[in-house]
Length: 364
Image (cartoon, rainbow, N blue to C red):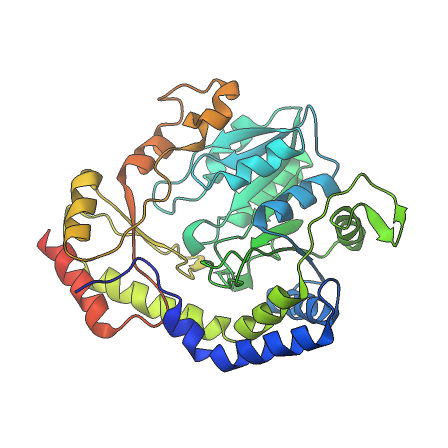
């Protein structure tokens, strides 16, 4: 049996007629930037997150960058980020001229460990960026308490957790602002690059909207040295269709994940866990093993597609050699980078595919 790491085909087939119809509708209008589709998506996604404002933008990295710009975080400032996440989180900090300060994760949830944050705070620290990694919310209440004590902003990197719940509250609405990615592989994915900022702060929302539109609050009136990062009409239209299906698709991911958790029974494999405060949406199903390369080859030889998120931690990437963080300084991130491997989890997986994966894992 051959099972790809990911397939969009079953999900997209389900909505194919709506997608084609939306394309024809937008094409016929001949209005492709800052139109009705974007306006409606922003309203609908803000409502989905339980927030007041949504600002569409070009991608998830831009969303984080725009939030930092909106808070005037820049040269000489520091922002706390997890040591275990995708590099976009740190890049956003670098793009505004600030310095990312890496804090290790909790080894059970893989999210930033709040108990380690306070010792990383200095008089240069301006914000904590909490990533909801793999679809599981970070422990945001503890993070907010620390931020309040030190007068820091809390920015949620929500790129992997659309629709996840923290203590029955939607992520994206738990800090000061949140950045979302709608990269095609996300739980809510566009058919290209797209992103959004969520916030309850009107002043921040207005500023971000202007910065992402060449610094302009109205045509040919530029109040900031802005950039060009706008959600286009076509992607907004596609996202509106997908948003209506997101809860159902997340539920399907949870069913698949639970089958894995119940079925995988191999002492060589460490399964992920769902924190008691969390409703995980399983953007990724990540297991660990001490013999990852051998395990990956075994799975691939048995027709099971895999991906490794992320094989080189950020502090050891060439991009961040200027920070001069040596091997061994962030041991948990380094340990995870050597042990994690992601299994297939996508909407439309067949029962026999799930059972086959469980069987192959248990026979390892």
